[in-house]
Image (cartoon, rainbow, N blue to C red; front, side):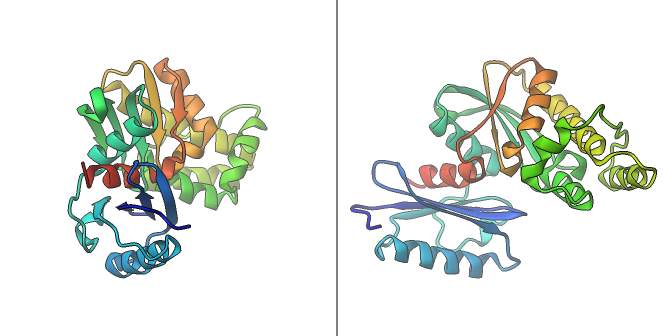
Length: 258
């Protein structure tokens, strides 16, 4: 497609996935890309943006904003907001009534209480242990040979939830391997894994005085059983943002211009 008028690009160079969003002069999304992060952020950015801009008619971006752990390595960025600021602004744009953002990234998790216009009032962050992150969930599901789109079905098959008691990601993974070796049904382990992660995320959310509309961002927001488990623990509904993986990149694009 060809876009008339200037566009802005937002890049979220995350630890697990690399995301880009292009927005037009009316701030509407005109293109998105999500792919696995590569070690060389500069090369990946140049390659993907070249293809994205070519598909938009060869137009040059008016500005580029970058966020994520690799934001300092994104060439041409005019602004490099933190992931907290980018996710807050992007979530508020997509869901104006949002009062709190729960972002579960590949290597950390964040609870962000929002003010008017996506302003950050308060936040809490877990970046010390992988057991509260998307990478832990992804790696453990791979161990169990359960795909993302099977999580909801497999967890519903469980007669009960297996107890995952370890608070360390390495020990928790070892504990889960032991359960399987002892014959614990996979659905019960999946259910226990979801409950374990939900406990950690609910504790994180509790630190920022939750209330109102809670919006989840990041790839883990696609896991409906996890959102339901967090909701049950905090007493407020948690819903996924539209296209939750690109929220940070959208926020970076919006912050890159007036």
